[in-house]
Image (cartoon, rainbow, N blue to C red; front, side, top):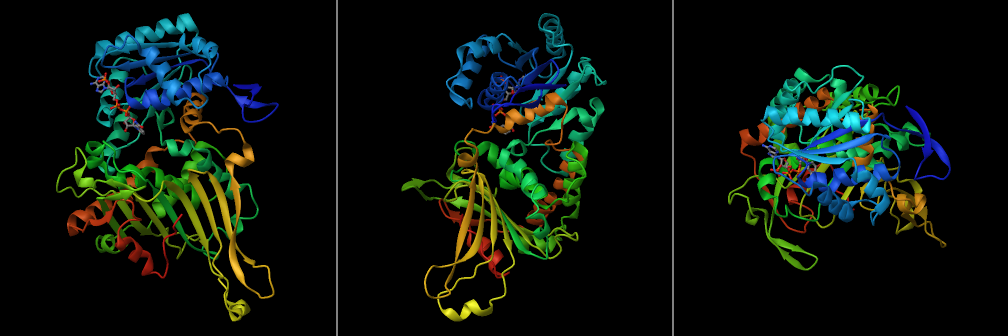
Length: 509
Ligand SMILES: NC(=O)c1ccc[n+]([C@@H]2O[C@H](COP(=O)([O-])OP(=O)(O)OC[C@H]3O[C@@H](n4cnc5c(N)ncnc54)[C@H](OP(=O)(O)O)[C@@H]3O)[C@@H](O)[C@H]2O)c1
């Protein structure tokens, strides 16, 4: 449905899409994600008048929670994008919030939920449309999908619609991702299945499309003829902070690389889709994943470095090492840092290395994509002494301090031909002023609208796991070293050596 409503980010009236009436059920609603992200996102959408005119949200989890609405209010007070929470807006939004307690394996609880939703359809006009959000430990996804099917809660038509959002992680290897896809496919069509990766909801990530395909300037240079290499960095300045038990099972490759970093990689490297439409975009992203050159067993040791942080310091404070964290085994080999070199075997990227690194306990929090162009020939500038002709670098900062920076060479004012690098900067904050919506706002709204462009398709998830699995196989077979690095450093020396072998160096963002 197309409706004209004010866009909060721009003056005047622009066309906004408003979804059909629906109810959203959050499985795992007593958990951290619901309070911190999901309800604040729904409140912000409601406040911006982007939710359907008839809407309700139902929490579902094991414990009895008589004060669910009050707890969600406390979550919004603490985490909503625009605070303080507006009393009048909250009061009307809160009318649509309810909670059902039940165990995920209890069919009777689903039947109670079904009855409750039918009552809401009658009372609030939600006309049978459903979004089910699986915000639970991943081991429960198959059970919940199966029970929803058994309870007859999944409409297979498009009117009314049933859509299911599945939180990350989507599997922990190719086999489990395939199994989850099969379970989902037993009860849902692919176009009802929304695998969420909240990084795709970030403005800066979506802006990669616009930077590339709405500017004549960059795309002609976006290939192996002009680009020397690409660096992708996700650095966190904190350790596992009490989530040692979770991280032991995951590691940084599963937690960061397979999902978020591969999203940046595919958006950065994909061919232009023939439409900004779910399958056209995801076809192109999936082609990149299929074009990733698979590591041979022996390549893992030479192309991938894994590391683990040891005691160190940050901002003058002593920090413990990963193995001293609660929930972490004394002899743990789980990687808290990874650096890798990979190639995309297609025409555009032939011969261009992509270097990825992700780590915890690094000196600062930064997520960026840096595209380094080929250096110009040295020519005559070199004869004048203090001259640094550095290659152009286009860096896309995803967080924090969102923006884009282009480094180019400039003449230093004066009598000589001295050349130094300078930067052209774009910052979201100063250019647009208004605060962008949270990633979850955009993605939840897209699901209600039936737009899965920014969600991961099943074959896309499998293609990324197929490639990633080889890293784990290589590590297991070779019993590869886990290199140490002190908390607060830029990672193990072996990661620097990985680039030094190619005559390159990591950026220090
Ligand atoms: N937290 C984040 O920032 C974040 C970020 C990205 C992705 N995720 C993903 O989002 C999902 C949810 O994360 P979370 O941190 O909110 O999880 P969580 O805090 O561990 O919450 C788990 C929820 O599941 C419910 N639950 C567990 N077993 C149940 C059972 N047998 N029957 C009924 N309810 C049961 C719990 O209910 P009771 O409390 O009543 O037992 C609770 O509501 C996870 O898949 C996570 O990987 C989380």
